[in-house]
Length: 386
Image (cartoon, rainbow, N blue to C red; front, side, top):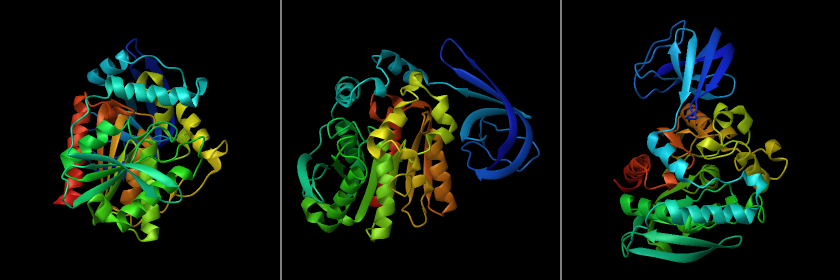
């Protein structure tokens, strides 16, 4: 455990190399306070200057969130660099305009095309079937059951795509992989999307599918006492918000998996939102556009667990696994969510992948993705199967 400095005054300079690497230097002139944060490589005691790390890395909070940096006395140099396999993949991706420059239909078609072209092969599974859940509306779901006839633990999964894009097809490969490797059934939710169906439609659909899975387990071949919630990106926000709803509704959730979750409606407060631009996969304004489509133009003023899980009371949530990507605009809010869970005494495991981008977990050709799948399915087995 390190002691993380919170700096009260600093100066900065930034240089961008031809390869796209950003190197920013912070000169710390005064330290205000310290707070604890985990480090995967080493630990240090409190000192009067930034603690040196054996790994050369330190997480420090400077005004607007976590940054990746090296400590040299009072001088801190941050280097955020894509991993070679990530840079190679992104260089092959066709250029796209910012979301605001195109239509909703174009955004949806682009994600579906990417799924077909670069997300990887479709893994065979014993049983994959489309069903419907009767909630406040009829909700399409897809059941991935690796062992027909057996009663298995279950994962209710909410796909990403900014509450606007994504569907059962774009996340089919990921759901198959999770079901196959974990031995759990996966129930993927084809929730209503914005802007046709604004907040709270998507959240209500995930709630209703979770409620139905717990109340009618025989229809899914699952054990209602062993259910997890999971999701990526905006789906991670839906999973976190639904976990909070389930806690208050008395519906048991054994584990929560959040993959690069977007859990706060104040992106301007997080350094990573400004730090990582289209060279890392997302335009700076994309996240704002997504929020406008789902929450409306007054999205920053929204409150409550369904809008910003980060700012809700997190006490009593199920043990949580959070996957982060270093070069991701939503990295810092995900890290802050993990810290808030710790403060609420909720067991949390953070898997932070250096040099990865948003949403790397969908690209199954990456070694980092295969490693993340192994670690996530290990977590599911520990909490639901073993």
